[in-house]
Length: 319
Image 1 (spheres, rainbow, N blue to C red):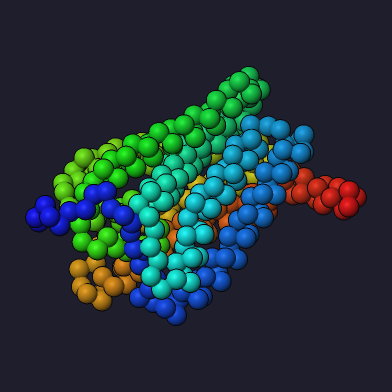
Image 2: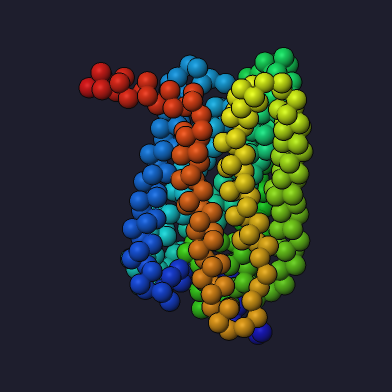
């Protein structure tokens, strides 16, 4: 391709979203708006109870508060843009706004990968080494663990965003996605992206492979320890403390692996369906998963449910 067709930096991008499926736009606008409100309410309540209720001032709920705040930040970085694209026939986004949105989304996703592994370690120590738990998971330990999760995710995002925005782009700069998803943007590059591909591969190992391996090994030890508990009631209580986290991990990583590991279709009809699924699966990952997190932790955790019940009368009394 001739150099004259290159344009870097570009003025902006066009987001296709569901423009090829106008009937779906109205349906998804309502669905995503409702889910976004549930995300803000559910995760906001979780943050509130973990801060106000002294019984929840433990490492597990500190990590849970971080996860809820992360989910709010992640969805807020993309959902308003998605909703706006459903209402605008030709949605454009500036180059700088696209870079910021790409950075925030990548940083939040990377942070959640690391944070979930930190939460698995917390459950491992609590169940497998309960006597050492207050020492191992002291405030001097779990606060830096959470901070490092945000730092690692942010650093990785800076690297990938910097590598991407330096690329020369060509054509009409149309992103076949709802948002500035990094893989969709790389397809627009008019130069060799082997460096980006290699760095993405390394990042996938660090943020997907290593955490999944760590979480899997942790739960092997956790399940082994639980099965050794003599009483059925004791086993039930022990498993209930980690079942919510395990459910969130399965949904989070299951969606990621399906999104990036599914085979590509070769026929035209299959390619069209694949194109739609390539947009809807990240949408599920980016909206449905953060919505389910507070629901899962509320339904499967007695402490959280008790804290929420205690919060409601307190609000009524102050009014």
